Amino acid sequence: MASTAFCGLQLQLKTCGLFGTALSRPNYVPLMQNANFKPMVIEARANSRTESAKIRNRRLRKKFNGTAAKPRLSVFCSDKQLYAILVDDQQNKCLFYATTLQMSIRGDPPCSTIEAAERVGEELVKACIDLNINEISSYDCNGFARGEKMQAFEIAISRHGFLPR
Image (cartoon, rainbow, N blue to C red; front, top):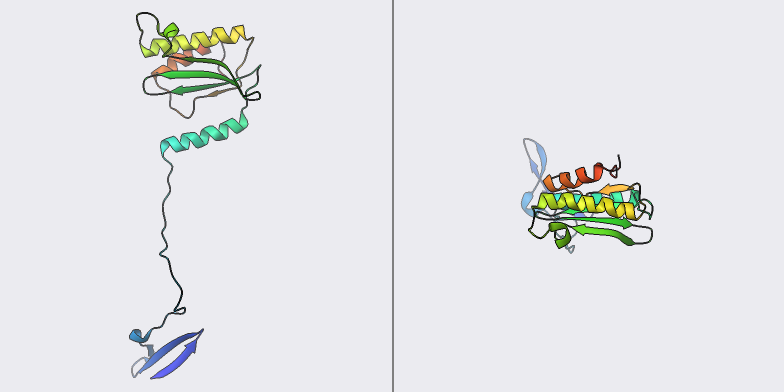
């Protein structure tokens, strides 16, 4: 049996008549005896759909900033309701806010949410005319897909040419 030192590692070698020298497995000594090793944990990180929408929305807000003359239209659509906001990002002000929950939009006998979303779009157009707004800088749908409420809202706005191309 032969003993060899390699990089601070003491190895015990055993000779074999057929193949020559081989390592002796039971006498294996690690390089650093006093080191505390932590197990390496690799986690796959995939963004969920809502996280991806938030990330996309932050990226878009960096590009498009609303002004008093050309505000940003931000629309949030939950499972049941629709909320629309005209935002002046330079002065951090909300120029217009409407939702399908408002009684003035819903009506005395309550209408459907889709009809209320269309009325929100019509109220937005009236507010834009009152505020002398001819154009919207960006349409921010917060990363949500177009559903029936969003389509009804967009139709009411696009009739007057307020949606950017």
